[in-house]
Length: 105
Length: 196
Image 1 (cartoon, rainbow over the protein chains, first blue to last red):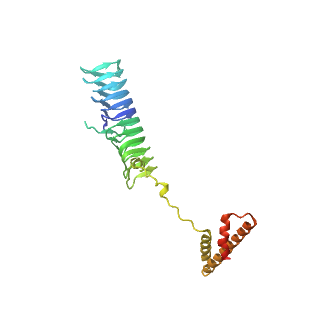
Image 2: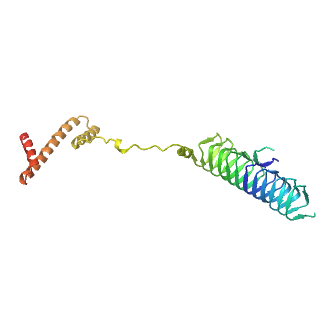
Image 3: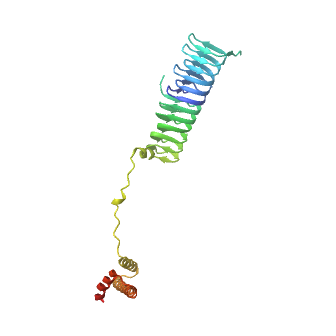
């Protein structure tokens, strides 16, 4: 399955739906729904409600995240919003504000 | 990580996309796209959007209007429905297209408007005397049916016109004689009388 990349200068205002991994270097506002992995890079800005399998945050995310498998907020990552996931890791240096709900399966 | 933006096969985006880099679309997009670079619509890509872009290469399916700064290319596997405004448009053999193409609008903006010549320089052709035009018209109409008569007709016409002239002069003279005579008319009479 091919990898979708949203470049640095790109601004998407709307809804993204898909089955493949997505890498965000630019800006996305709206809603993201993926049956795969989402990677928000250092330069990436996401202002959206997110439903994914896995998410790794190196950049900025504002919005609620619902992950089926795992959420990782890396040391450069910043996030404001509510989290719902079975597995969560927040690295040292990361900034987070919001509610966490770790689903017991 | 490469800087090129790729929208993959299974991705569906509905909304606005803006950017300053190349965008390669293999999935689906609905909305508006505004790019200051090249948009590549790959074979598997489907776009339903109004597009403002520098260059577009269409190998997939596009429904919407394009306004391109440089060029629009529809490759041999490309399909498009919509209007195109661009200075350069390439439609390859095998491509499918339905819509309007406008390649002039950018040229119109850059080219200065031609000024109309001033009306004083326009010269009106000299008017011909009425009798002559009559004869030429008659000869033209007679030429269609009769080949020999025009010369005679001309003669007749000149005779006719002379007769008419004389008649008019006479009536004018009669009127002058009857009514009070001014000095200018007197002169005319003096000039015309010797002819008779």
